[in-house]
Image 1 (tube, rainbow over the protein chains, first blue to last red):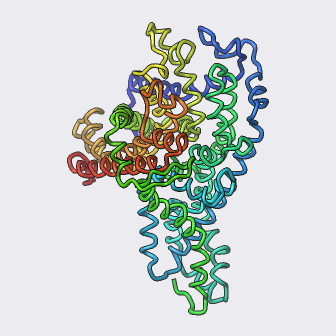
Image 2 (image 1 turned 60 degrees about the vertical axis):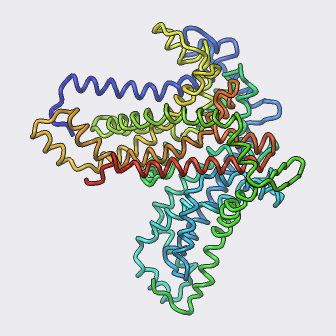
Image 3 (image 1 turned 180 degrees about the horizontal axis):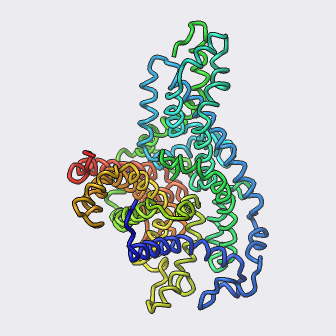
Length: 277
Length: 295
């Protein structure tokens, strides 16, 4: 953008960039470095970034905790994030298809109600949702945790916007050839919105993997808890064993980091749509 | 779209809409209505007792000694967080708007805290902010500053939480600023350069006014999220030390899931919602004074 670049300007810019990158990365490096230290070596002055005697003690303790199991929690997290994502995406795409392409009386009003609920914060519905799950006898069950994924207004909105841009002629000619609406949805509409679909899937997966409050209140037995909940609980129990906590944090961040790095382009395009928080 | 009469479109519409609609009714609409009802009850879920108390829950919360504290802590968080997140996001967005080698790499680096879960971020930051051996205090000590044990200090716990939140959120809002910067017509800057405007002048006369709609959006979003600050507080301080960082959502969580007083928790949620509404409306009122939509 700048045509004339002064030397001082360039140096200042590089300095600013470096400071910002260091501030962002240092806590991660601190976590990684601490996770390979032992109980005796974790508290040192000055800081030793490369541990003198690197050890997997923190990770080993993490996997052998009493009452919790990292392996079990990892499986739960992966399973629940996958199912919640599938439920969110399927439910949202199906509803979006109706709002975008199948007119019915009151369609606009129903969609208006959908949008209006976006203004009510999730905090207001958290307590009654818990009570409803309790009445349904679904507390402390995976089903109970997953069911609210059916209601994903943002997903419906995102997919509807994308489906509205599709040209009707493909669908109409398929219908004239005798295809049902179900076939049109599966064979024509979904492939045509594949890019948005991919973005939504990724955002939903990251959101489910990282979610904390809902799993924390719904899943109470330890063999059902997710990584985030287990790590949150560890924080209270391992106050002075930072190496174990940092190992736990590494294990919680690593999978989602890999997913992000592999699919970065799609995620970035979703950010401009206001998707991930 | 043209649909033949025999296409069974009513059935199809019902089938396609059913999962989402059932979900919306059961987990969104019924809860919104019923939480109003619950807020008028003395509902002790542990004892299983339910009693009509009218507006007593609201009165008890609003006149209690705890509420002004909760409000003060939440507003302190906002007052510290809001200006800093806006400033940092604009700075990072502007940096990313330059063409330089490795820009994509820096973009990825700045975004990694955003994809990190709050639990992991809070656990790491608890250790970063810890008293003598924590990363921050060791760095401060090396330049001769003797800093407190952030999270165990009544005054410094909230600033500590704000630091963690800034670290986690800046990358997200920077990308929103970046998108807005990219949409500014370069002709403005060229014209200004011909007129001899310097960098600071360009920033204050072109960039900032044209960025103001985005900054307004960021403010509205951040006030809404900021009033609901929770995960960081729960994990880093649990409302402590000595109730120095109690905030709205932390109170709601404790009433509902520590004490099982569902009526009080519901009333608290509605008070929070009213505050969110009030703050959002106020910002829309005030936007005429500073937001520029003329570009």
